[in-house]
Image 1: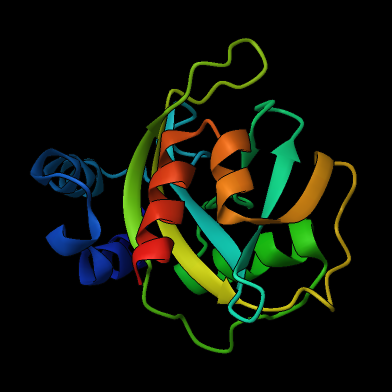
Image 2: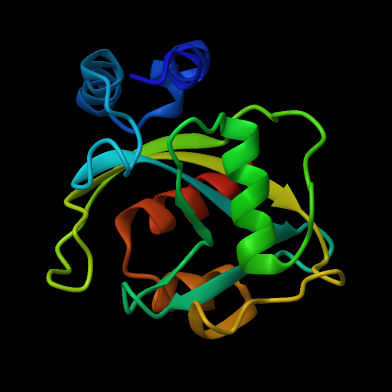
Length: 178
């Protein structure tokens, strides 16, 4: 078990960040079980997601992900021996082309659990998601076209029409309420 990652997760997991008490309890149980990364548990593991948001235009940046076939927020798996900040910055660099976005780990925006049913393309069955908000206008993005069919800045109503992923939809709703 990656003790550093487990400690970081324990420090940030809060019932107020979860949609239900059951989600909170399941996340705590997964941390207690260990094997938190995809390398340690190919089916059930933690991921980081980040929602780019432009407060001036009130738009979010979503991606049409090739593997999942869904419009969703960018993000990905936490690798073995990675800490949350490392995983978050690595995923931002891999998907948006921006190095070391966050100098320090920001507080999470929300937490979710996402069932995955996309075999044989993905071995994942369950993602335990730590979500971060990325305030940006996107002017420094160099999007990796290998991961996505398409990427787009869009208003909330369009994002809600395109996104079918419950966790992305929930995150959009939370952001709109702020």
